[in-house]
Length: 87
Image 1 (cartoon, one colour):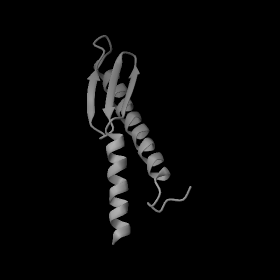
Image 2 (cartoon, one colour):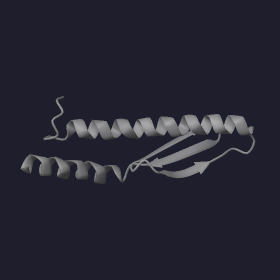
Image 3 (cartoon, rainbow, N blue to C red):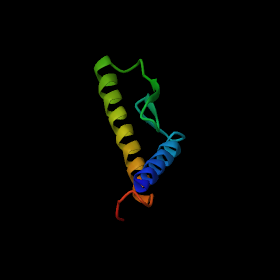
Image 4 (tube, rainbow, N blue to C red):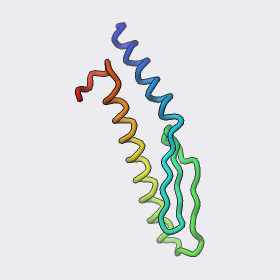
């Protein structure tokens, strides 16, 4: 039971450390900023681009930013002792 509480504390620490992280990606004037909590903080669109291109780029940026944030979270979990992950 105490191991589980330790793990929960470690996960909370990781979550807290991620709260200060931000991923900012930009392509062709379309920009997305995602916080460590996986919430979108900012979206900037480029009115010069056609609607379909804006939508395509926006979708790609959001997916890429989410993948990068997940990778950061995973790397921190791997470095945290007591979670059962082996390096």
